[in-house]
Image (cartoon, rainbow, N blue to C red):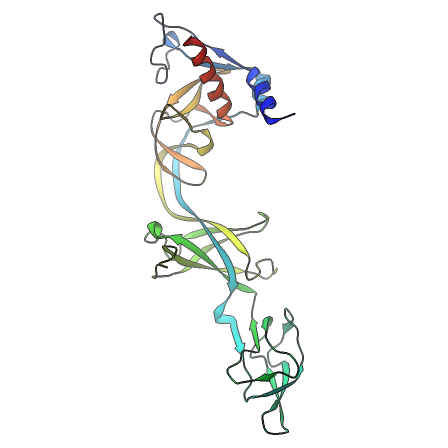
Length: 310
């Protein structure tokens, strides 16, 4: 069954209850008086369940202001070592593989010094994981050549890209939630560094978090998304973003004025985050509104309006 047919069936469970006042359509979007109600939508209990329509109460409280940001995992540069040969020479043997865990002082390779028969060992400066390996047996290496990179991955960094418009808002110590691409791994932490540089190509700046990675799920190179809370406002009425609909250039929510009876209500919105929207006017604390699948009521309301115009 196509999605269009499913939508038509759902609309069949929503019944328009248009009650004419004064012989025609009045200003029904702001009127809560049952004596003058007009252009309402009635929905049965079965329709509510099948359409997965949910109701919630408008609440007054503290609203966090947040920013969505994308980024990626990199090794902790304070716990990363690039390892070179002490003298130029030819690699006689390579003793570790990429991704292998090594101990401080462990031999990684053996090099024969150039112009002599003497061999010397290339060793790791601390314990960690071999994150890069650019050497093979028989290769000539200079002292500038990076043979290995060893990183302690128990703590990694996440670099997040912040749009220029928000660079002054995000500060060190602000809370951030990090989610990997699967949505299963989540980390809560605080911004540990804010760059003062704006990258000209993207007009963005970088902020950093330190992430505990004892379980090894935050691998370098992994792309992540984040929600950063940079401020909060108090004593505001909020609704879920999913409740908002646009009709004729107006922002509305559907409020319940009686059991199973809904009215589109004009609202003025203010600040918003990833989940909530501040309602500046048009909705009172405690009023019940449609928080999910309100587009179904909007479709039926518009259908009812169109039928009365003919």
